[in-house]
Image (tube, rainbow, N blue to C red; front, side, top):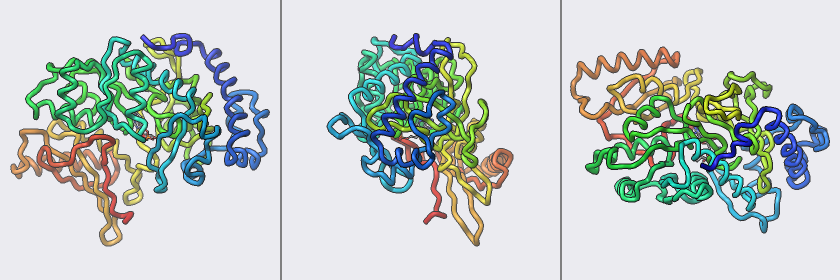
Length: 432
Ligand code: DLL
C-alpha cells in the first residue's frame, strides 16, 4: 500500500515543522522568480525573511484567479520553460484559460499525493484503476493516471464518453477502482441496465470521485447502484490537480496532504481567518512546488476544516465536502443559493433522480427560478394528481431549505443530457 505513514500519521509538531521549512523555501523561490508576487509583497512591505512561523503566512498577500488571468499565459511560472515538463489548463472565470506548469519534481509530488488518495480508497499495486476522467489539458485524467502508476497499480486510460465501451472494459479487465466525476459515475450506473448488465458483472470495490460538488445523497446513490465505496477527491489545476485532499474509509472530510499544501479558511468579505468548523473560502499555499508555486491562493471553494484525529489514524487536517464555489453561487431575488442545497432537497425524495437543472431568468424585473428534475424510472409524469401532489411537496421543501420560492418542472426519466465530465447544472439567462 502506498501511503506515507510517517507524514500522514505524524504528530502536529512534526507536520508543522515540515510545513514551515517548505513554506520559507516556497516564499523565497516565488519572491525571487515571480514578478507579480514580488511586486505584491513589496507593496505590502514584506520580505521572505519575515516568515518565522506558520502564522506569519498571514502577512503575505493573496493570489487570485484575476492574477492568473492578468499574467496569462505563463507569467506566474517560477522556472524557465526548459524546466517545465508538463502543462495543463482549465477554463478561467474571465474567459482566458488558466495555464499551469509542472517540473519533474512537481509531477513526482503529484503522483505521490494521488497515490495516497488511492490508498485511502483501499487500493494497492494489485488493483486495476479505471480512469474515466477526461484526458488532455484537464488534470483529472492524467492526474488519476499518474497516481495509479506511482502506486504500481494498473492504470486504464479510458478518458470519458462511450459508456458501453467503458462498461465492457470495466467488466473484461476486472477494474477494481473507478475514477471519474460523481455525475459520470451515475451515468455509468444508468448504463449498466441499458446495456443488459448489473453491478455484479463488475469487480469494482471503490471509486475516487471529484472535480465537482456532490452531496451525501449522490454518494448513497453511487454506492448502492455500483456496489462500491465512494470516496471524495478534491483538487484544482492552479494548485496541482486531483489529490490535494481525499476522504478515507470513514468519509468524514478529506485529508489534506499537508506536507504539500497549507490550508486556511477565510471570510471572503473581510479576508480574516474563520475558526475551525466554520464555513468560509479555502485558501491554499503550495509547499515545495517549483513550476508554478501558489501562495495564499483564493480557491473560491466554500468548505470548513476539521483538526480532530480521524478514526483511520491519519492526523492530517481534513476539509469538509465543498459546498460550492463562491462563483457558482446564484443570487436569486437577493438570496444566496447554492446548487448543492437544491441537491440535498432532491435527495430526500425517492420519487426523484439526481438528474436536475436550475434555470434562472428574469421577467418584469423579477428573477425567475425553476428546477427541472427527472422522475425515477417507472413513475409517470402523466398522472396529474400524483404530479401536483409531488410538486407541492418539493416546492415546500425547497422553500424551507432556500428561503425563496422555486417553480418545479418534472421531466420523464432520461430526458436531461447525461454528464460525461463536470455536470452543467445551471442555466442563467440573466447574464445574457
Ligand atoms: O477539477 C481537478 C480534479 C480532477 C479534482 C479530478 C478531483 C478529481 P479544475 O478543473 O481546475 O480541476 O477545477 C477545480 O473543481 O476549485 C472545485 O470548485 C471543483 N472541485 C474539484 N474537486 C472537487 C470535489 C479539477 N471533490 C474546481 N468536490 C475546484 C467539490 C470539487 N468540488
